[in-house]
Amino acid sequence: MCATKLNSLKMVNLNINEIFYSLQGEAREVGLPTVFVRLTGCPLRCTYCDTEYAFKGNNMLSIEDILAEVKQYNTRYVCVTGGEPLAQINSHVLLDALVKEDYQVSLETSGSIDISAVNPKVSIVMDVKTPSSNESKHNKYDNIDKLQAKDQLKFVIGSKVDFDWSVETMSQYPTKASVLFSPVFDSVKPTQLADWILDKQLNVRLQVQMHKLLWGDEPGR
Image (cartoon, rainbow, N blue to C red; front, side, top):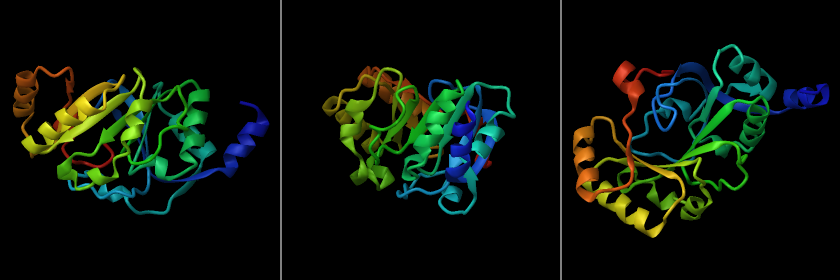
């Protein structure tokens, strides 16, 4: 990367909650060693949120410093998550910088903010907020049509009502992305959700949070 570009990355800051190295516990890259860059802040307050600790904080880091920390780990996989990363406009600068460094980058986003400006080489993992989240009113359904085959659309299922609602939403908003159905930890049993999926013969992937099976709710894992 040229000196001019490096200097510019020193000038761009993000509020970072944590940067850590672990196994990816969700989505297509599940099980792969990954660096997670968790941004602080989120405009939503989902009932089943498991990262409330990331709502607040003041830890400003430059893009250059973030890249330097990511480079400590021997992996090409980087997941930018939150909170809600897109709530900080400079998250796009980080995504672009990671792509330029030849990382395989995924972005976890709530689906409540327009994804149009996300670097096309980034794999988007986007939620559709189900009724039990109490935040489904913030879904930007036009985002679904912007997803590509490299992307993933995730429904977090906390009840049979959520499941039926998700099936109906899928029929209304077809997508090129892979579709994930994930049970709310300790609310819906994975076997129960599996039975519902098979009963409806849905073309979706059952996703369980592997990191919670390994380490429970321990932050930074």
